[in-house]
Image (cartoon, rainbow, N blue to C red; front, side):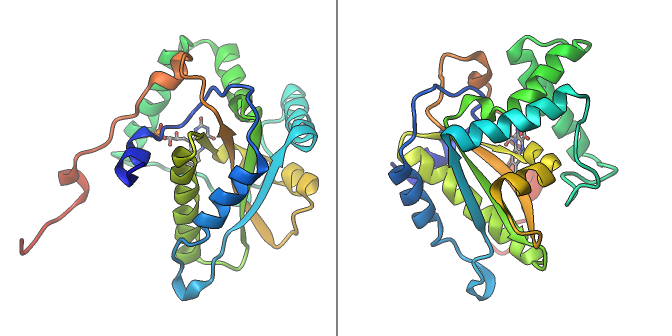
Length: 224
Ligand SMILES: Cc1cc2nc3c(=O)[nH]c(=O)nc-3n(C[C@H](O)[C@H](O)[C@H](O)COP(=O)(O)O)c2cc1C
């Protein structure tokens, strides 16, 4: 598979088939992704790979807490978004949610439907396996960017193996529960979870493709 094909065929998969993912595939993906670059070769990524009973127990724990009316463990370990989002980001975020909820047939005022979709994050959208990405608390913005590069490599390598992924930042809202379940040391910050598996391509939610701004909106060329 060409890199361009991996990039263009990746999307956030929000409906997976129950078909299992073998450990050897996850190992190969992580091993290859570890060739991602990092300043000073710090390789600041840490990963927990879960499947089966441990993943189900963690998901059940979070879903039980959600059912009790808790929405997050405060304070958060890091902020997912700017506190006051400005344009064009506010509109992009709003539009991406609307596109997703429209595909799911969930109306704006359907609070129960929207909450159900929130809770699907904690089922990893039905993925049989999940990855949890963490970074040392001491790490700086440079290393956070590098963790992102590593995660992108994971998503593209998954495509090469016929797998799809969903990065799920919502897991970071439950950092204490995840940390306890994974026995993750306190000096690590949970960045996000990720569902990985085979996409249910018949699901309407998997048909959406989020638009991208054109080159002119984010690039300055000079001297060409
Ligand atoms: C780090 C990260 C965290 C994300 N967290 C969530 C999430 O919690 N729930 C969700 O439904 N989508 C989540 N997404 C998916 C984004 O909404 C998605 O990448 C964006 O809308 C672009 O769509 P695409 O991935 O299908 O191209 C996340 C993506 C990234 C990169």
